[in-house]
Length: 226
Length: 226
DNA sequence: ATTTGCAATCTGATATCACAGATGGATCGA
DNA sequence: TCGATCCATCTGTGATATCAGATTGCAAAT
Image 1 (cartoon, each protein chain N blue to C red):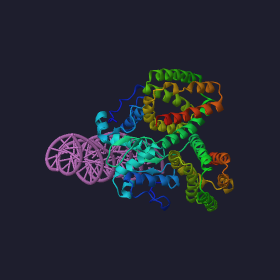
Image 2 (cartoon, each protein chain N blue to C red):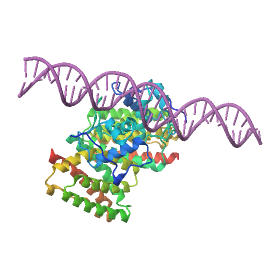
Image 3 (cartoon, helix red, strand yellow):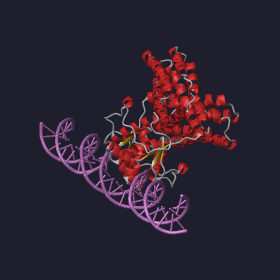
Image 4 (tube, chains in turn red, blue, cyan, yellow):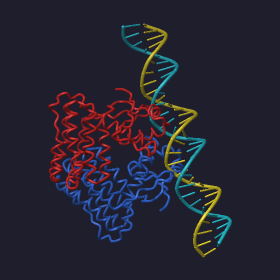
């Protein structure tokens, strides 16, 4: 439960240098959430972040307000923002939404994802296996995020992609904690290769089914750590 | 293409007087968008709104920034915010998302919506018929919104509800214009009563199918007005 | 040693100000 | 009469100041 010294922009997703200050800070913070550099309950202070980024509190305030609106952070009056925690019920709700949305996206992506992207999916699956073996949560989450990103972006619906991405900022911190607490590696399953196979075979129905199952499986992980 | 003099809070959805200033203004603005009081292209100025609400520009900025993040408004540097317009492709994307999300919600709601709520749905269906006959777009949209609100809220997934509600703020302005330009009333269809019947019969599968069809029908409306 | 209380510090919320760029209308020229 | 140009005005962006409440750590008292 530390006060966050938030991430320099990651190479993997460097914030657009052209963007306005508020957007840059928003992107940097969100990425920290997605890959689990911040844990539920961590405090995030406007002034501290402003000093770290060398700007005034205004752009930081914008970024925090936006993340609060997305429920990735919780802000009480005159108290520091905190990384949102989740109740079991809330987690189930989120995974249900992701299941529906990413399931639909996978169904479409299966009919149109370019071969090069499919090959990237295979790579990422292997990287996830490796990260899992090392118990490297951050690396696993980053690869997992990119894997899903390729698929829900491949559906060609940018609005859907934006919504799903917002959900990852909420589940990231919790998944990070969950993975760290989860020592029984044998309970982990990697459904991802089967998803790739279905997409490569252009089997839209099966791709949807497997994607829904993969996301719902997170719910089981959640129950395991309560 | 007028500069907006934005709505006083509506009785139907009075912003919470307890809430912080920024949230109050956000809620008021979003309701204006949902019911189509603002049309695509209308400009929304920070200082003008601040004066109308009797506050400084700060809370208004928050509200506008948030609506921009939700893509209900578009903001270019040093130019007034505008109510976002939609390309046909974008409209199809949005209706696809709503279709998936509200379809899933209807499936759940059909198994658990209380009798009192079902009766309210019947009322609202009749009100929509009446509004349509009067060609009263704003009233129609308000009733339509409330109808869908009851169902997607009835699924008991508040996060899903919040996402869907954000989408209404984007389709509202465009639907308002579409309805006004749409004189051939005979092209309008009211699928809503059939949805109510399916829910009342606890036929989850059929409720989902009808809900998806109802939302997809909006796409047809869109094509009609291009 | 433990608890209570107080004060310095940190928090977000709002208002106000400064700035640079975009806009739009009026005026001047042909 | 039409068109170009320039200046007053409006725009969001960002920085700073102030305030009231929350937090926290230290000190004093039992």
